[in-house]
Length: 207
Image (cartoon, rainbow, N blue to C red):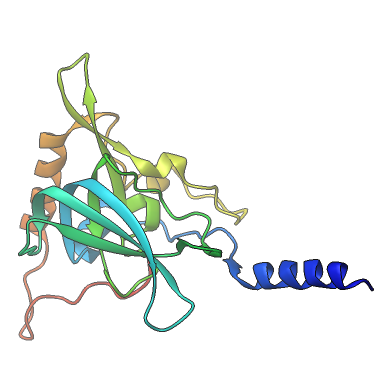
């Protein structure tokens, strides 16, 4: 083998070694009540910037989504900005890809049901189910909420949930932000009170 060919093959192997990719992620279907109950915090925010960096533990890569213009509906956010840490991204020649993670774009305004931030791979309840877009409806002259889960990849399982259950976490089409917030408040008002140990713990790491 010529030295030039050996160098090209070696370079290709190194590049392959620096790419991590897994199969598309799926999530357990969640009702709207579960989104509210499982979330550590629920907030409305505008994505100001999206950055990526390598983790302190070595080869892991994280994407940091910085949100501002916050409206906190559940939980406490002491700062005027909120940073959501998502696993994966691209740093130099190192790519870590998780197909199925919902995209959060700079400039977009979202309602997020956050769970396990700086702990879970994608710290939002139910992946796409816990992400909603806030968009301006020119015809109605008001902001409306649209589910991001319409863009989610289909589940691989052949079993299908009844439509009433699979859509249970979704708001009505183009519901206003005000009505959506009222719906969240209603669930918070009716949820069971905390036990002797304090508030119920979040629902673990399962999306």
